[in-house]
Amino acid sequence: MINKKTKSNLKQNKTYSAFSQIVKIWFHEYKTIFNDAGVITLFVVAVLIYPILYTLAYNNEIVKEVPIVIVDEDDSEMSRKLVSMISATEEVKVLLKTPDYYEGILLFDKSKAYGVIVIPEDFQQKIYQFQSATVSVYADASYMIIYKQIMTAANYAIGTMGAGIEVQRRISKQQQLQQAISERDLLPLEVYSLYNPKGGYATYLMPAVFLLILQQTLLLGISLIGGTLHEKGHDDLLVQTASKKGGAIAIVLGKSLAYYSIYLINALYIIVIVMWLFELPMHANYFELFVFLTPFLFAVIYLSISVSTLFKKREHGLMVLLFTSIPFIFLTGFSWPTEAIPAWQNYLAQLIPSTPAIKGFQAMSQRYASFSQVSQHWVHIWALVLIYFALASLSMKILISRRLKK
Image (cartoon, rainbow, N blue to C red; front, top):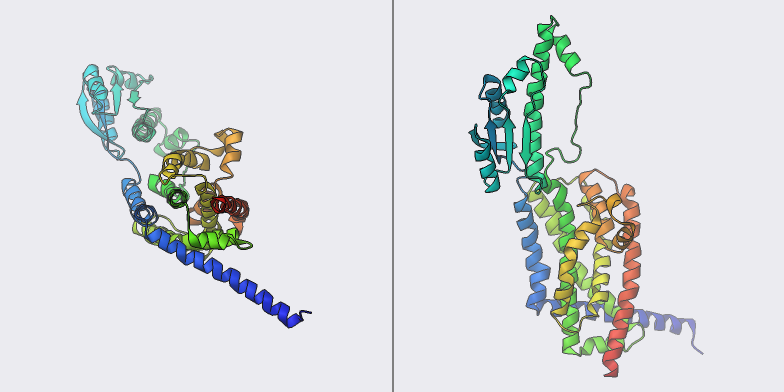
């Protein structure tokens, strides 16, 4: 009979053996990664360069000095005042002031100007007669950011001038200045730009892009490794490990620890160094943030391992998965409101690790959210970890079993 001490020793030996297998796979995967130039490019070079390149592109935060043309058909004191007010805004730069409408449109058609503001010839006359003087704004709406800046400048200048004219009209009717101002602006509006004071594009966009860079480089890199394994046809350590009980799980755990250890450093580089370098908002506790992001990395890793078993050629993963970046950006809901996305696409989005991760990451880093306030996203990511871990283990078991039969 086996006594309790012997049973305990056997359990310890099994535990040690299982742990030993995981560690062997872990360090074996390091060799696989660092002996593959393509994987190094994705895991190291791309992660080092892409965050900086993308952030540099949006580092100005907002578009300034958009070239426009002002067609002043009136050439009066009031029209010149309006031209001066428009020119003073930071959003636009007056490329040309002309009385000729067609000259302005010609520059617009040649894409030398992105907007044309037309001041009509009876502009001052109508103002003095207290009639509506319509100013026309033609702006390139195919580029929404530029369109917004032109309209902002035009609305501000025209609105300010209109308010001044109205105040002067009231004063001419014997009203006091303060009374005229208060009656002109019965409902004053105060706008506070929370979480993104500059209204900048980089502040809004880059935190989400950073997580997508981590996700996509992992997905492509691991798929590259999976395709290579198929081409190679045999890996002694993987076959040896898979032949043992629970071997597929040990392989998946060992591989995932190798990938996680590399991407933890990558995440530190992006969140601590890149975000600090470009002065992007970071209001989260770093420890809590990395506790939140840990399951995200594992969910992406297990998803990538599952997918990688499908590719029989090294380049197949790149060919198939490269196109997923744009759909993933769309489905996460930061480029287009989730409420406006069809229901079936929203359901599909919940299976992508970046969807809950980006929501939680943005809330913590930009909106001062505590860990408890993003706990629903954290639980969501852990559910994906369990699903994709089971799928990765099953996929790996099937893959190795087929190799053993051959």
